[in-house]
Image (cartoon, rainbow, N blue to C red):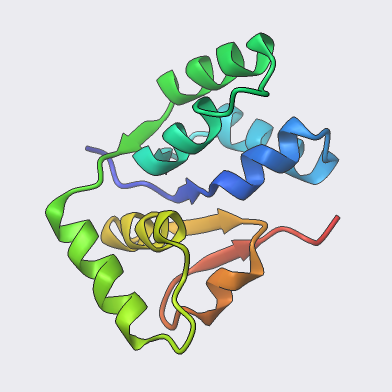
Length: 131
């Protein structure tokens, strides 16, 4: 696997789905760029399981995920997420902890719109501006 420069969090995709120009621009730059990028398998689950998502968005996501690396949630990633969550006064939601651990495991920047990730020391983050 080629080293990933970025892992995209679910929050960015949901903002893009809602027409957020910043999120759409960031995704476009990732897809068109030369650098390798990806998503955690948890993100794939989170966006594809929504019954309310229009068919066009589900198809868009399938094509998008086919064009990037989908990081599996391995035992190592699950253990790292659990360890980080144990150290936090208020733990992250399980999907967020797993996404953060997946990004960290490959040394990638986590592209997110969720400020909650700022609580994680040592995690490289690119935070999109609030809408």
